[in-house]
Amino acid sequence: MTAPTPIVTMIVPGRDIAAFAPAALDSLRAQTDQRWRAVLIDDGSVDDTRAVFAAAAAADDRFTVVRHDASIGLGAARNVGLGLVDTPFTGFLDADDELTPRALEHLIGTLERTGSDFAAGAYVRLRPAGDGYAAGRVQPWVAAATTPARLGTTLDAHPQAVSNIVAWSKVSRTEMWSALRFPEGVAYEDQVVAQTMYTRARAFDVLPEVVVRWRVRPDGTSITQSKAQLPVLRDYLAALRGGIRVLQEAGAHAAVTARLDLILAMDIAPLLEIAGTHPDPAYAAEVSAFLADLRALPEYADADPDPTLADALTW
Image (cartoon, rainbow, N blue to C red; front, side):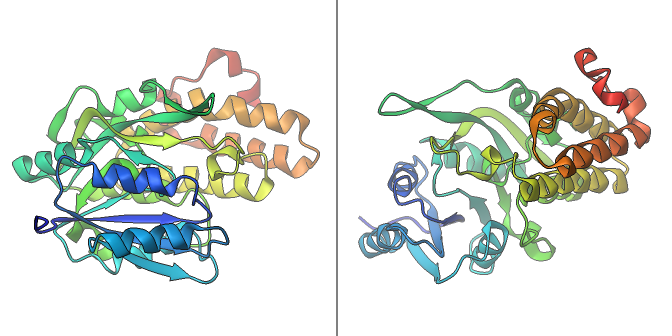
């Protein structure tokens, strides 16, 4: 059977993810909308990732493999993939995550109906459970961004959308990327990009359907599980500051307030807990400086900090 003409390119980067990549690739093959091609980017792996990607491409010409002998980082790898897109739509899937079967059907189908610049869906965590993994529920901040469905909306109409900051929950029109690329050489590279997409879009769609299962690795090696490392913390705080700055420069003050509410509710307490026992005093100093930056924002007066953090927020 001849495969349908691709209309979306999925950029699938990964490094040392041979144990997880087969499930990610299977989730692409299982899509109810088969109008896809995929750029598989092996970012300097030393395990069998290269072989997994090569086998996929040998069996299915919708897969294209790019291999880096040394890692260039997730942001740079995604940018390499963006340079190879030749379809009307672009999406991302990290090679240790999984699409739900109707993900592309929901995202692309909605864009075809509305003409919006991008569509964003909900996602859940895929946590270790026994010998495998189990999907959790949609977290409140994800639901606030994606529920109920809003088609052809804007940041002014739906400022809570900025809570959905990950690259892999979205499919966009490829022209959005003509003047947009991921920061390179840093972690948390998708936060500033996501906020830029919200501020530049003429209109976007948000969908309550779960489109991605985001894997939490049992060995704790993913970036989101590494915030106790000082360099990772610095990248993380820089990304948070950068995302807020993008929203401020666009005059999206309600979105800044929504972002502050989430940061105060979700990010501060874990960082303070780590800072309280971290052996390097620079860690607590970085967190303290970040809190001071938040308090200095004009939108902070409209934010809703967790009352249990009242003392911490006056550092």
